[in-house]
Length: 473
Image 1: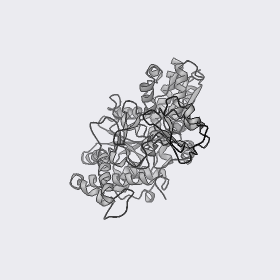
Image 2 (image 1 turned 30 degrees about the vertical axis):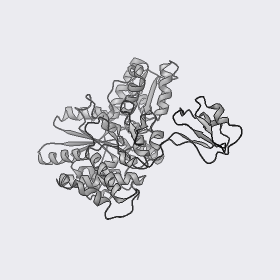
Image 3 (image 1 turned 180 degrees about the vertical axis):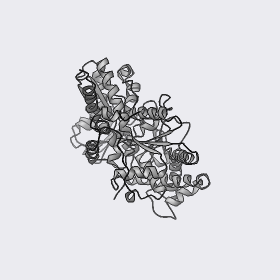
Image 4 (image 1 turned 45 degrees about the vertical axis):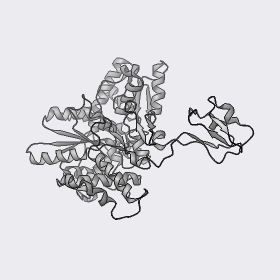
């Protein structure tokens, strides 16, 4: 069964797998230079102009698989030599232009960017064009098209531009670390840094130190991934890798739902704090609205805090669909509780680096959270959980949720909140379409992911949030 959506994901996975294999054997530093040759042996054809360029790019992928540029605070980086196959971008006139007499494109352009040659064919002066799109809208032949790069189309916060070498560049102040550009780039030139080597070292150290535990905290969206195996087999695979215990981040979601419900009732208006990209977006683009952000930690951080307080010597590794969680784990207020973050793609590489066929393993149980905590993984789930939490705590407050599925929906809701015209009192913000099930670090994406998470929710043995939390010490 196919494990990934795209060949780009598969290529990145192969690099991670090879890096992990060498890290397990303590031979990584001695064999770094051999990894590109292993992945692209001989002189076989590649998607690039030649095998040598392909290997050079693979070398850059290896660096990112080992943590990337330490001087760059962003967890998303650009491999510049891989970013040269896309058009420069902007509006262009295609050969569909008929040289018509109307010249509507010229009339509508307020910047004088449209001119015509001796054949009456339109041309756009890039130095004058403001990319408003007015010319494209009025062209009767739809001959003017936008050649925006996939990464720019994917980035809804306009953090990506092109440098003088025609490579993409990221404005770290605008970037919300959602990873949409990572998933959409057809050449894999946008990549998230990996901390897979650090996780392997942590696991190896725990095996040497008696009593040292490494906890895996798995996001509820795991129910929609690894479709070639059963969830219980994935959990057993994690334990076979060396994790002492596997807990559901959904249990942290249960904690957050209870606290967020109380805070909402107290303040009257609130924006959720579970999606770090959404929180970062508010702080960077709408700083005046930061006062509405819930003061609660995310489920990842909340459960990490509980683990560290219960077992002070423990290490915590969060595993989920999200590149932004890697950035969240670096925040000063989260660092004490979460040691490392892996995506599901990286977990697949970990399994395969140990030649582990998880589909052949026995099933281990994972039964920490309520069904309401588990549906945090998809859009709308957080709001449902908050409504349930209010009811279970006997709090008389009517929630009017504004469910934002993707960052563009978040923008619309925040604009209304800023103008005091929002028809609602609780903004559930999710940067990825569909919620966490649409995260850049997923193996696969699609509508079936929502169905899988909803099924996972129904299977929770603890039907109430309070029941789930009663298991905590």
